[in-house]
Length: 429
Image (cartoon, rainbow, N blue to C red; front, side, top):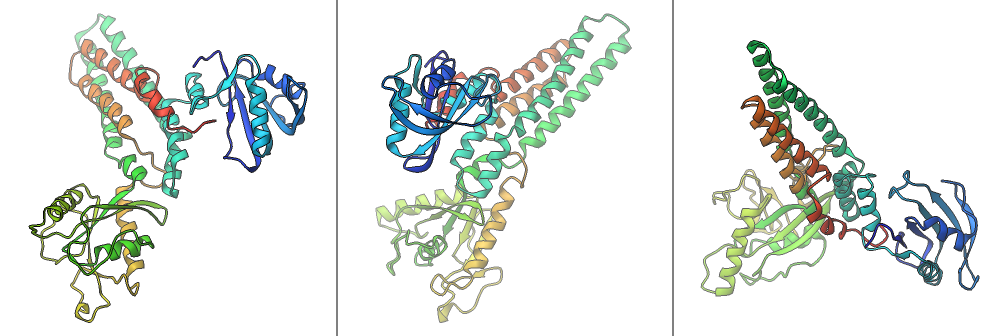
């Protein structure tokens, strides 16, 4: 790949479709447009053009053509978009015409966004948010990803970094200044106080719920003894036959994961083997895996007896098979549910959503992913050091904090993860 190349790709959905959007970006984008569509349209004004194959002059289609001049474009380069009819034949003919022109090539997955990052149109946190937005499957995921993609964290990082720059400038000035000891001490104390205040603010951000549960789903493990109705409950909540249900104890031998969206909240519902002592080797392995799933759970739906120790903070006690005559008495603190009659299923789903929301970022609140939290933690640690040392070491610690913010925003030190990030994008994005 070379930044000197002009790239192009289909940026809309897979054909056939009513309309297809093909865009090109790079130094030859305008020349290619003139070769295919005649004269360039005015900047940012859609114009209807007849598209022709440059080699044969054969008409390909009539399309709306849009031109965006660098650096005020999505990629920071010259960009042309063609909005044509969305048949496979039209798309293939237009892409083929572009391929025949000098300096033009098909884009790699994520290459448009990578160029936007390289040209400073977006920072790394916005690129991560955009990747999450493209993969969003629930309303909660969409909102959180959009908040990040629109620059929510970038703006906060800029404010933090500006504070750091000002603190660093004062620290360097205090080192160079030779004056009264009391005045120097006052400078040190003021710097230490402000560095600690910023460290405390970062610490509050690090205590917020992370992005991974929102992205991967809240892990809700259905657990209890054999034949307690776990698999039937999973099927009822999923509204599909995802787990095998029989009257034979020990039917479920492995964990079965079912991704759901309940009221826009991402849930990973996990059916597990019944917990009991067993001489059956395979069943015993299933029981061990069930116990492992319970340790990793964000929330447990417990179908066993109330007095049994669970060792987990987040538990909803479920009195399953409540339609049976011998299960008419509902223990205090348990929710009566029947997968057969539907009794209590709506109440259980609401309880799951209620508990899950407590583990997710609040609406409109930015959520850090693992990489972002790591770099923010590095910045906080450096600021704590800056608040508890002499001026020279304070200045060095503040430089270390700035470096962490640069890695957080993608200014430096992130080359090793860019391929993995932009590889998540589809072709044409």
